[in-house]
Image (cartoon, rainbow, N blue to C red; front, side, top):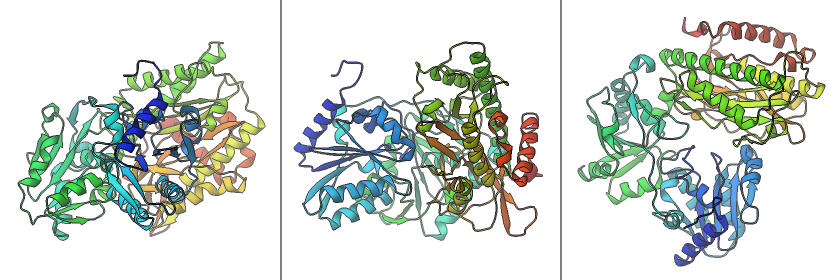
Length: 587
């Protein structure tokens, strides 16, 4: 048992390698997700965090008997350098446009080009879709994939007590649809495709379908559970089911998480089970196959239902966004007032103030770890560990990326980069140039019009164009869907975003410029899609968040007449949004 305050990761990797040797493994894949394929996993429950110390929301490990690799995307290149011991792990900085999965498979090919090998993996942390691609690549190389339950890291670490929390129901007046209506739509899909039982493992889909919310997972309004939907029942399997409020619908049957397999055992052997292979784990498929079920893999209809927000959801979300706007505004003014009076404020203290303001505004949880990055630290795209010793100075840029959950359990997400100091503090020419260039990209996205059928990739290019013209780019997607989770898909606003943008989608527009010797500028607003006011069969983006932009950093000489016009409209909306959130598309 380790007693030092800082874990001995070298020892932990060595113990894992001992287990690998026992099982005759050449390599081991350790995913950053959990058995529900969550993005945000409690650090105490994450096998990847336990063995490496890396706490980013995305990142996978590949451990061989000699080497160990950490694969991270552009958001976490610098964070990985700060958190991971390079003597133990080699950081694989995956470029924009390449998935972690592809980079991992390529590394396996490089390490085992013609040598038979056995690669261990955690079947409860791989989606079926991802595992099938891995297995196909491995078979070409004559590599055997070995399922490990429990994982080797769990064997070395030992059992842990997972956190549980409160589960409550929300009113259909917030969601627009009662659970019964959502289940009816799902059953139509099941009947059309000849499916007797539909399996759901994605937690935000479960929260959406049941109109239930929870607070047991960091930065989510979901709860650990599995759902099985039949023609007349909806079984919700979760730990300690008695802690949940009575659901609104009698046909929602709450059972213990360990009892869901009994539902399968009691089903007829010839029943047909459907699931989404992109969000269901390989471990679940192994269980279904062991029970001789016929399986039908199909994209989940719930994902599409959930992405298209109802007028009731939009109304509620806009009110939550307005509260978040006010929190960020108050935090900015608080910081500038404190530093201007000579008080020393650290990144950590500022983040703590933001969290306190959210709580005072009625939020029950943050929607992600607060990014509080001063000066050059803003160049770290997901700077998730504010420094208690880094004092914030007047005249430097401060990047604040934050969000929270309010009553209905929908996430907020907002980024503002601002100049620290009072109204007399002036931005440098470089600060103004970079900020205004990012602003031009943000305006391009928030004012974009396009024909129906346009993909997220097209909008991504529209937002990047002003930055490209000035010689800049950013190593992350332009935006992500927002709903019960702060990151949901569809939609996806990136170069790989092939899903079609539709009315009612809610997503971020968040271009940025990151320079190691300068810092970072990111502007993020949440937006939706509405009918174009002029052109039939066209759509347009409109913002839903209206936190003011820092006028001291805007170089109006770099803006076009149309951009200036849009900025005047936005500034006016910023003044009135906290009084009466604008709802032009709901009129």
